[in-house]
Image (cartoon, rainbow, N blue to C red):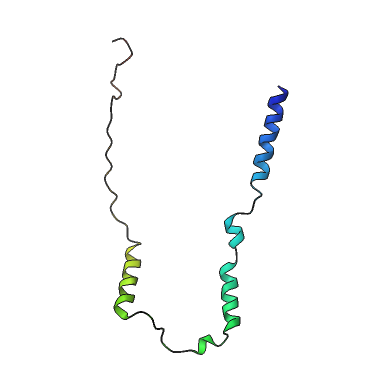
Length: 96
């Protein structure tokens, strides 16, 4: 009985203190805010740059946007097949 109570206390302690470790979300919390702040400090006049963004032509950009938007469309679920071996009417092992 003494071993059982010691084991129960140990398991309870592990469960109680196991949730105290920082999670990935907590470690990355605020990263996007900090990056935006640092980029504004690095180039505070970025809003005055009215040059068009270069790097993708219109067709490639349009195709990328369409592919992105199609990713949110719901598709019909694939049919599932269930094979039943035996069943509720199976009298195996009952002696009948």
